[in-house]
Length: 428
Ligand SMILES: NC(=O)N[C@@H](CC(=O)O)C(=O)O
Ligand SMILES: [Zn+2]
Ligand SMILES: [Zn+2]
Image (tube, rainbow, N blue to C red; front, side, top):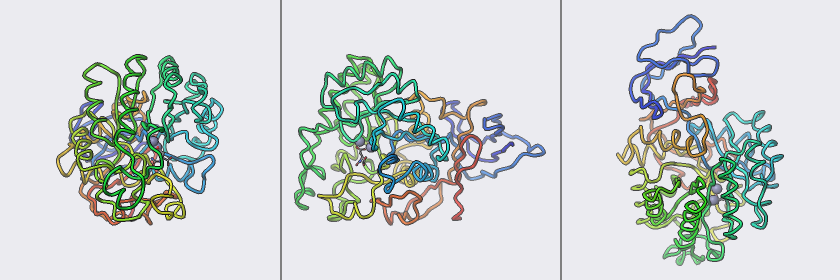
């Protein structure tokens, strides 16, 4: 089986290519990249004229909810949503029930994904057993079973001594620490950013300090332990400043930003609508602008979704009571194109760096490259196609988006995993 992708604009930071190239895929691998490849007998030809052809997008942060919360999402539906969003690889967070906190659970997830997921799943193990913050999980065994990182996502490990030991073990095992930064002792019942909007809606606020204190602590620990640290879903301007300073100091830290944080602010919250409730919360204009600037300057090196589906009933409980989290897999590419690329904040090349090439390096996987010989995980994008976002169109079980009704420009056309087309947009 061979597939010839013809006439597209290949954007591949790994090989520094950005231009008109044809890509020949054979046996699931990139076999040849050239300015003109003539189809041979038996080649299936895919017309990519007008499209970007990029290494498959990689999402460092999703929630698949299985096991335990299958009514919100499953491995199968979450992977389908990712494919529709242009992703060929995703990292599910371990805050399931039971928690992914052992080599057995990592293997269980890998096996299930092998059978049910249309995209590659790269497991993330918990830092502590049951995410209880009391005792370290067997980090070495999880890494050996295939975990590419550890994370306590959903919360932070508040016991600094225990966390430091976990970081040392992650370093020894050669895996990355993905940090959700939230000081539990400060956050209280906070539901929205501390400020006028939270006040008006009568809910407790979450200050920037809740994130900044733990981001600072984690960076200091990355320095003392030498572990590879990646900050999840950054939302504050001081997170950007700290990442910049840490990198200047030679500390091995990277960071990601999600579309809701680089597009929306607390001022966009229309009222008591939990589709605007996520953790960390939508912040101020100043924070949002600093995140955009951080992405633009390459301080923030990754864009992730923090795809966090919940049921319609859960999200109808109002801002004070509904769980934190919004879906993101199926809108991220269009939102990034609309708000960062078409506005000149990122070049298409930089977008591919933030959404594929750097994420691959951050977790150390042999993906994010369309060099000859690499696995043919490829995304085709129509950069100028316009449409309106409707939650009802999502294949995810979660429909909880704050971007309902947004008109966007740029759309995923095809998603190819290991040479096989797993998603095609047929709404043309
Ligand atoms: N982001 C969220 O608002 N929620 C996440 C947890 C998390 O990512 O911290 C979830 O699991 O629902
Ligand atoms: Zn988190
Ligand atoms: Zn998360």
